[in-house]
Image (cartoon, rainbow, N blue to C red; front, side, top):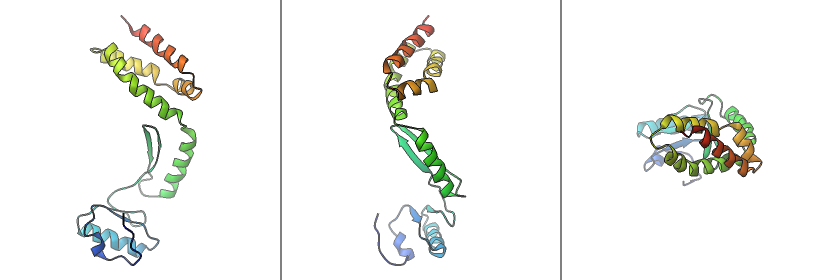
Length: 154
């Protein structure tokens, strides 16, 4: 990113592969989008529309949540994102890391039986498991895994 404190000129896009029109001047934003399109460069502008949307996002470890209003109200997308950020704490990232490590074990347990693997994940990936992780009750999570594996064993 390079910031040059002056008015936009179409040549500013000469070595760009992506353009964001993010000024408080709609005429400038429209000029950026027009110049980008003329140069075959995807452009984003919240005011004038563009070629792609940028969702309001947040992460919890490997979990990435994106909210989009389809360009109609980025402010509303941000509001929803802020609400969801409060609902999804760090336990979601912790659980995803743990589930990622568990995948190989379940694949080895049921190498030829996709139906049993799906049944296992349906029993393990639940809000009650999320709650156990949020309370750091990993021993109970492991017990849930053992019970689930036992119930699916031949």
